Length: 186
Length: 127
Image (cartoon, rainbow over all chains, first blue to last red; front, top):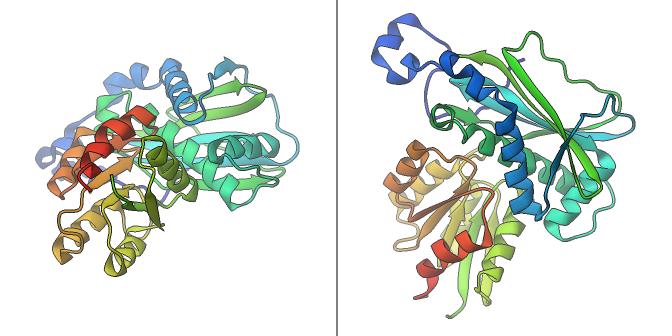
């Protein structure tokens, strides 16, 4: 899975051997830190931080839903640079509307641009908070602007990721899931 | 404190509203807000409005926050006006780059009301 449009601080995203000697960023490797990067606790901390600060609500980890029926909203923020992949936040349309209503302080009735914008921004903040937990990622991994998908009967599939962390969360009576998928690690 | 004219630049309209609400909660009661969804729109606002404070995201389509900042400096569009970056990008490199480009402050999203109060009020207190 490739994510285009990743904002990145000017580093090449494709390893080219001769440049590795000249560019200190290219010499960085996250391979030795993979246990730390893929630690599910980092994702939990990032989600708790964002929901606490943005919505004033404590979120609790819960088992992810086995399947999603009906309309749902999915936000994707791509990672690029020393790690490539994405942060994906998914929830039902009902819960997306409720989250957006709490964020804006205005009652929303359907999945409109504002709801999509709100869910995209939550995903963006979770992605930023998650990568901020690892200094090498914070410095050398860029974020894309959020992409938001809404509708019914769609699936996200990633082929052979390096690692994937997938957790369900609940706050008040709302539920959402967050996935960190890494499909390339330098 | 007299009226503060703020320019909020963020591609998320929801975030623009949250930032505006936070400024009011921080104690800036008399606030006039101009919004822009990108750096390009921000430059247009600056060309035709007097502004006391600029708050800008970094990750935006078309023209990002750092390019926006560089354009403000090179065109001398807002001399002396404090610019604060509000962004999910939190690395030391991003902070240094923003400061090099002329930013007076840097706040990471998600932010607290206290952070807005502590880092932005002193910049507009003399306004």
